[in-house]
Image (cartoon, rainbow, N blue to C red):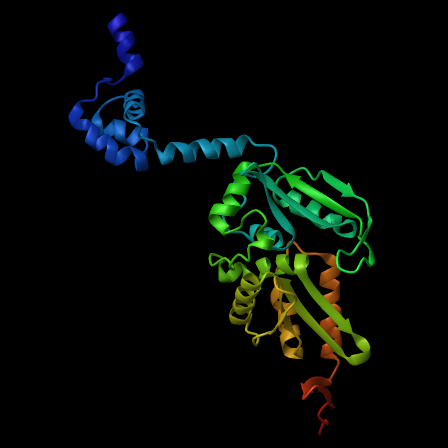
Amino acid sequence: MRATYEGLRMGRPNTITPEQNDILRACYPTEGAAPVAARLGVSVAAVRNRAWRLGIKSAVRHELGGATLAAKNRTARLDFFDTWTPESAYVLGYIWADGCIREVRGALVGLSFLCTADDAELLRSIAAAMGHEARLKAHKARAWGSKVDGTPRQSKAAVKLAINSRVLATSLVQRHGLAPRKSSLDLPYPSNIPDELLPHFARGNLDGDGTVCVRPKANRAYVGWLGTPRFVAGLAAAIARVAGVTAPTLSSHGANLLGATWTAKANVLRLREWLYADSSLHLPRKRAKIDQAADLLASVRGYSRRRRAGGAVVRFAPAPVTS
C-alpha cells in the first residue's frame, strides 16, 4: 500500500542526471517547469528544485505569478498598460502631460495625476478605467509671489489622484519611455504608439497640456499642444502624418517648452473629427471648446491672416467670394 500511495503521490521520479542539466539550462528559462518535466520524464518539483540549485530562473513562472497578482489586486488593474486599448492610450497621453511617476529613494512606488478642481470628474473617469477607487485629495488655492519680479499670483484649487503601484510605474518606465521628473529630462516621443490609437493618445495629451483658443471677434481659432521639445516635435509629426493635416507652427516657450499649433480652417475641422470620432474618455469642457472653434471656422468663408514683414504686421483681408 505504501508503494502504491507513493507512486500516486510522486507520479514521476525525482532524479535529474548531470546530462539532463544542459536541457534544463536551455529550456527552463523560456518554457517553465511543466514542459521540461515532461521532456525529462521527471516531476515538476524535481525540475524546480534542480533549477533552484543551479540558479536558473523561469520567465514563465514570473509571468504566471504576475497574472495571479493582477487578478487578486484590488487597487488597480496592474496589466492596464500592458495591452493597447483606447482607454490605455488616452491615459498614457494624459500622463505625458499631467501625470507623474513617483519614486522614493530611487525606487518606483506609483503614479499620480494632478488637475484643477473643475476637472475632477475626468480623474474619476480615469480611475474607473484603471479599476481604481477614485479617492481624490483636494489642494486649496494659494497665493504666491513670482521668483523673478515678485508679482503676486494665485493658483487654482486642484485635486490629486495617487495610485500606489510599483508594477504600474515599472510598466510605464520600461514599456512606454516615461521616467520620474520627466519635464526636466526632455524625453523623446514614444515610438510604440499604434497609429489607430494615436487619436486617443493625442486627445489625452491635449486634455492635459493642450489649448483650444476661440476668438469670435477675429473669426479665428486654433488647436495646440505644449510640452517638452522632443516630445512635442515627435507628437506633432505623428499627428500630421496620421490625421492628414499640414505641419503645425512650432514655437518655443522658454528653454524647456515647445508649442505645436494648427490654425488653418481645414486643419482645425479635421482635428476635431479625428480626435473625437470614438472618444470614450475626454475632458467635456475641451470638447465643447473645440466644437465651438470648428463651428466658428465652418461659418467663415476665409478669415483674416497676419504675417510679420520687417517688424510690421501686415493684414490680409479675406478673398472676395465670386458666384
